[in-house]
Structures are given as structure tokens and as C-alpha cells.
Image (cartoon, rainbow, N blue to C red):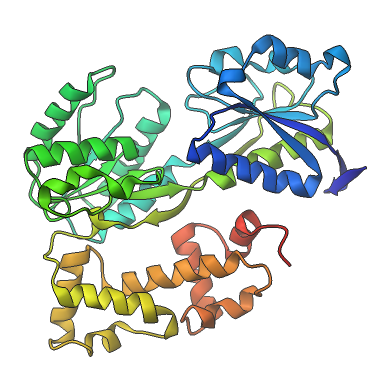
Length: 414
């Protein structure tokens, strides 16, 4: 029994997901994506965790020693500490895909699923620029991984395109955290009062919050901050308690489920061809941001006036019912211009941006339901036409609605 794709027969069998870190949210989402593809192909997915990893055992499994059936393919987490012990030769003739490598792979022809770091930087820039900051800054990780440099370089290009200079914190490898945070605090103190700071990942964003609280520089009134990865629990970071409030750290949430799905899809192509890529052939796929988790750290330098918070509540309730910025301003005792200026000052983006953010989130939710035709989604989200929704959706998420549904909606729904 097998499955057909592009007229190629994809056999059923066991697929190994190697070096799977247990209880880590990002990797659980990758595994969910792998299993979503595998369920359609009738594959059985088996994980080999980091603590169970043994090269000899993996090699024995891939050659079918002891009468055990060979896996039809392997998906490998390329964590930095383990990359050198998982070369293609370890897997013999079993096809292998490397998932989200931290460093470039030196093996010619390796099939790889990688993060689109330029898209990550663009999502962060869009969120930070909404607050019209006086200055842009970036803080890299202390690691030497290419994604670190790629994100900062892409962010610098975006700043240059808008005629803005980017200040970059001079990171040092293997620097103790206490010393790094102390240097970071001194560096943050030298930034203008309305600065937007891009952190290479959420761990760096937490360091920024800790350093800012020591100066102190208020987040978000003096500094707006966004990280990358969409770590759960980031909104509970306690460094904000020095200010008597607990805003969360905004983050570009990466689509790790799509990463797993693309790895399985790529493996399906290799399995269907019954061969790994030739030395001259490299197969690649990419994944990027899923969304921006918009929390308090990018909600602008303005005061939290009560009417602005009330306006946000109205938007959350009525954005998908045709609410407009003009109609919203009419609820409050001030001119539309003053209302929109105060809203942007407090939130870091316009009223329309907030309305569209809620509508597009609703569109994503509806796309997860395959029983709702795409043509019916626009009016349910408050858009006048499907063309308007499709244009804005592609602009925000860099893909079509149909493609997004294909990559994210559960296959089991009708």
C-alpha cells in the first residue's frame, strides 16, 4: 500500500525524527507539522530524543540490522552540538532531510529546510516602525550562528531603505551573562528616548528587558522591543515589575509547524524518487514568520489613557463587524485627528493597523476550518470584498490564503 504524489508512488512505512528535544515547544510544533504530512502519507513517525541518540544504533537501524525494517526516511534536527555526528553517510541509502540547521551544512546535496531570516527581520521592522521611533537599534545574540548575522543584516537593509541609521550592540562570544547585561544597560542608556530595538531572539529580548530595568529605561515608553521565536510565557517576564506593570515582550512567532511539514514534504519527494539527491543536486525549502505576537513592549511610548484602552476593547469586539477608524473616533469626546494621534502615541501603530490586525487574525482562524470556503471568509472578517482581504493577507503573511490553509489547516477536517 502506498500514496500517490505527482505520479510518483510514496511508500508507507516508518520515518525517524532524530535528535528530538523533549518538552521544548518549538520542536513539538515541528513534530506536529511532520505528523500532519505523515498522516496523509500513512507514515508512522518515531522520535529519537537527544538523550537516546546513539550513532551506532541509528546506523544499525538505517541498514536494517537484526531483522528490523529499515525506515523509509529520516528527518534530523541539526542542533549545533550534534551536527558533526550526523553526516549523510550515517544513514546509508536512507533519504535524509536536515531541519532548521543553525549553521550551513558542508555536505553537498544535503536536503535542508531553513528559516527565511529576511522575512523575520521584515516582520519585526513592520511592527517597530509603526511607532515612528526616533532611532532604530539591534541586539544580536552572543552566538556565532549565521541566523544571528542574517537577521541583523536584513534589518539594517530595511532601515537604510527608509533612510534610517541602525545602531548595533557589539556582542561578544562566550561573555558571562552578568557582564553582558551590564554592558547592554550602558549601551541602552545612550539611545534616544524613543528608540525601537530589534532583538535577535526572545532570549536576547529578555536580556534587554533586564538591562533596561537597571538603568531604568521604561519599556515601552522610552524603548519599544521585539524578539523572535514566540516563546510561550514571554509575557510573564518579571523585569517589567520595576515599573509597576507587567507588559509582555512582543515577538515574531516563527512557523515551526510549517518547518516540520516542509521537512516531511521534502522527504516525501526523496522517498518517491527512491534516492537521496545527487551530489550536484540540493533540495531546499524555507519557513518564516507565522505572525507577530503583539504585546505591551511594542505598544508605543505614549501614556495609557483610559479612552485608548477602551478603544482597543471596542476594536477587539467589533473590528470584524465593519468597524472603521472614523466610526470608532465618534465614540469619544475629541476630534478624529486628536484621537488617532493619541492612539498611535499610546499603541505604537494606527487605529487602522489595529483593526486590520484583528481582522487578519480572524481570517487565520477561519482558514483553519476547511468547512468554510475561502470565498466566504472576507465578509465574516469585516472586509468589503474578497480581493481586499486577499491583497492584505498576502502583504502581511507573504503567501496566499489558499497556500496558508494548505500548510496550516488540519487535514482531517471536512
